[in-house]
Image 1 (cartoon, rainbow, N blue to C red):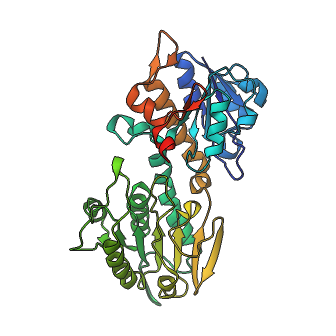
Image 2 (image 1 turned 90 degrees about the vertical axis):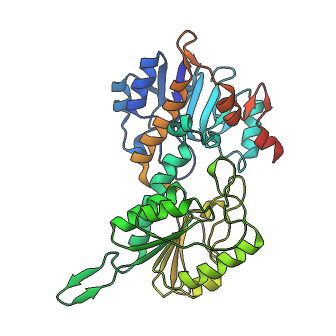
Image 3 (image 1 turned 90 degrees about the horizontal axis):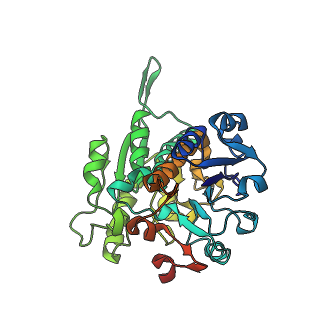
Length: 374
């Protein structure tokens, strides 16, 4: 069983899908590991570190030659995978809805593509969940990005020259990223409030010492879709939430939006009129900007100014903390493959619950029900 760790080809992608730690663990399972030269350079991992862990390091052709499992952060270009074993697994974040043509090409090439972002949110799969591990650090980084753009201090400071008021930070969307954003903003000394469409998050918000901002007495406030994800809300709820948020957002210095709906464009949370109501010098960080954005006027890859408010739209936020996010992503991949490792076959054998959830292609066809239904 040969496992190949590929160098990422996507522009701006600094993460890597394997570390010396996971290389050692895969070898201990009985696999051989090949790493493409330079794969870890942007995540502060030298080729020598992989070699010391027991991997062979070479060019892409040598890395792919006869490989049974190809590990990536983002889905590799199907045209660049020549030499891999017939039916090789591609295990990565594959963006199935956004890159459907690439998925079709994996099927045509005979690969078995496994989308790690389709991992079901069940207890035994928590350690395999790339969305959670990467979102955690995205939420942290969002607050640091806000602090970098905000021209005032976060904590209240008592000085001989007078008092500096604490920044007011509002987090919209309380999933993994939102919870970490709340915790990080609190650690920096901000006054933090948060909201979400899922009523169950109110207790989580308050447990972190933040104020929960929720629509009351409107039907359909649960907002919980399958697998713990948020879902679309009723028009009545959206109107009530917009009114509540408008009155609250005008008083905020920092707003961080994190709302995503799988397979759909990001919901619009902040309008241009709401931005105009904020104080000049305020900062909004839109973590959903690559899926269409939660904020009107946000631009992917740019920091723009509207009505005196900075709107931060960095792409691929996890990649901005490449060393730590790579370590977590790599452990997710190892935890996944090792959980299904069959010692007799010296290969992973997936069960139906997880296998059917994440498998996109098999036997030359697209087989995933979520993709076929879209």
